Length: 91
Image 1 (spheres, one colour):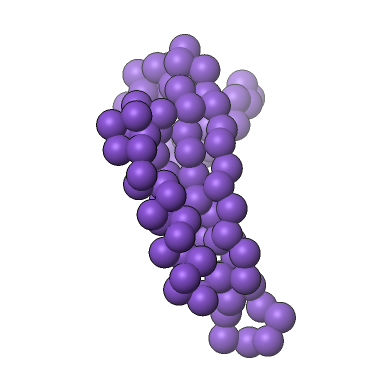
Image 2 (cartoon, rainbow, N blue to C red; image 1 turned 120 degrees about the vertical axis):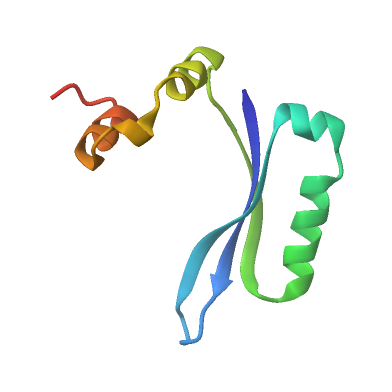
């Protein structure tokens, strides 16, 4: 599954202070259905003047991995078990 994300480096209150921020994200299927959404988010973020930089990042997650993640009810796991699940640790 492809994921398309708009990230910005938000300008904070103190000079030289910035915070990375996920502005918008859409999967490849959603992008096919609404191909302008990411571009609009990108342009809006740039025009806002609230970010020192804005980028579009594409990432891919294998379908098998996504299905594995979605097949577990992580709400039934303790915090430690969830951390191990998401990081792939076995112990």
